[in-house]
Image (cartoon, rainbow over all chains, first blue to last red):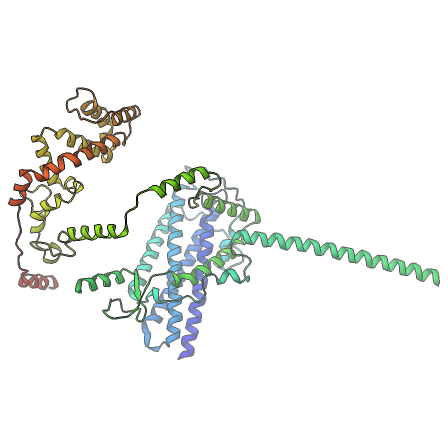
Length: 246
Length: 309
């Protein structure tokens, strides 16, 4: 039985991580609404990301609830793991809800159809399909049914989803008794600053790392060129020598 | 003791503190068990995980877009940054003056302040329904609304506690509708009701709606401030000059200094006289002292039974 529990736990963890990824991508997508890179494609991507998030939420909710409620079969530390996942899931939901609310607000301010309002010239030009593809874990997106959904129905659906997420949060509070305050995080606060596994803490750090990498790259290319010319010179000198002494 | 334990349990239930040994049991115990303040430690894993994922997701954008996003973020934090202290080097003179003032400021001893606090607590002890059971019945416990009837804003014969409270401070009588009425009647007898009228009009101007404010701002000065006005109030020349110069560009708070002046005048002069007057003493004697009514357990029991049915 413990093996089964462990497998279930790992599965749940993978699902929560997937939801975390989708949530992050959704936030990044929401940032582009109303900016110069806003388009019907973006709205479509938002819709798909949202749908994916909804599927994930449904699955995780069922599994976590059943796991935490049947209590007896779970071993003590496994229960702690599940509770940790539960907190991560709840936090994801909260963020998702906030982002959806923001998306709804922005989409109402900047409708893309008939009475079109000028978008804010943020200077962003690139598409966001990479983000959406990341969220949906596929390599390419085909925008085939973009025109099928009118904007109003999309807004209504978003509103409905928003209510659903809110209901899920409330339901989870009621169904499972997990005292959040008693859960201790695995990572110490500040530990992520010491580790350099992920390039820099902020986006600024990220850019700096890029620049540094490019500089070292240029230097190594020059060194290689120098070495190459030296070898050729040596070869020429040697051949001349051989020709003279022969 | 029972009440304090109940209060503590409420504090725990609202999540401000939680028991360390048994985090699931949200009750306050009367022993040496430990409690800890709430923190966000439980969410930390999520914060780190989400931040990493955000960085990874942001890499999907084009390079130029990433730069734009970064500048947007910086601009956001520039606009929303916490207030910065003015650097000491630039306004040294200003600072020196400030510290001089601070040094010369009269300070009250903590023992005196504590004594005052204690005195105030004792004074208000019997007026706090959380600490002293209120008479005749606490409506939240017994469903008996007689308490509210007795303490209605403009009741004919107010309760004794309420009348006693008016003597605590000038603010108390002004904040009570019935007290205000009594005080107004008293001032009328003394022919100085226009001061209170002016004060009330100023309150209206400060907190009333915009439309009223437009009306007030032409009526008020003519009614109270102009020479030989109908209800002319007596304020000193400096405050008058300040107020009249403020009238040139009318706004909500233009009469503040005049209002403060009148307030102090009433507090120092009319209010002590009112407290010593026969009107107040008679009111205090004739005040209602409600008797405690017994909780009718049978009634409550019947109510619960009907509710459960």
